[in-house]
Amino acid sequence: MGGKLVSALDWNRDGGGWRLNLVLQDGGYERKPLTTGSDISFTVQRGRFCRGYTRLATRDKGGSTDSWRERTPCPDNAEIKSGSQCSLCRSIDIMNPCLRCVGDECQALLEVRRACEGNECYVYLASFNGRIKAGVSSGARVIKRWIEQGADAAVRVLRGNGMEVRRFEKRIQEKMGALNHLRTDQKLDLPTNGVADDLTKLRKFAVQVHAAFPEEHHIKEEPRAIIPLYGIADLDVKPLRLRIEEGATISGRIIGAKGSVLIVNMGSLPRVINMRNLIGRKIAFDKPPDARTQSGLDRFIQRT
Image (cartoon, rainbow, N blue to C red; front, side, top):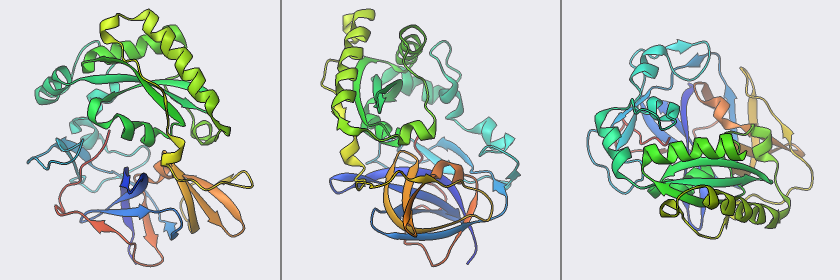
């Protein structure tokens, strides 16, 4: 069976919880659900390829927090040496200016800038086994953002427009010691005694944040435990890490997922795989994947 390009990862609601999906590109876009308890088997093929770019949606899809943007395949099907985009797609991707933004000067398209200035956004604190990270999200997708990052617990602390919250985030990171990123192994470091300590640390940090910013921007709410939404089974042993590289075969039963990390029982041992390292690679399944093809084969709504 021919390989399919992994274009993105995507979390969506699944009953009372959430499920991680691979977004595969092969002419169109389709989702491969990574459902806890299901079997998976694929091999990583040779080479790295451009995952394409994000553009403004050509029509309103509705029902999605990301309905204003859509994923588009690379026009050159370019093979690349590193990263996940060729120079052309990187230069025209509408989201790249936003990913670099720290709230000083907006370099995004006019339509994106207007949305940024007109929508309420949030600064949040997320805990990863006691490590506190500050981040930002638009209002409609904040819980999804926490899940995408693999947070154990999280809370919103400040509100403002897109430019304001970027400046708040930077100040909290530089002046108050919150992290701006974590390594994959740190995100996977599951709390051994639940999230009570994480919730306590988030409450205390939120008080410090509120003391440093004007009250008009405050959000006062209780931190929320995110761990239960992943549906990860209890593990008797610490999982071994499996690297994604050419020729690697992933075959086993899915135990669960957290952020970009998939936990798979392979043989008698659980393994953890950073699925983000699959983006830009082609994989071949041992049998046709249970993929859910989207109605528009030339587009797929992509998260930040």
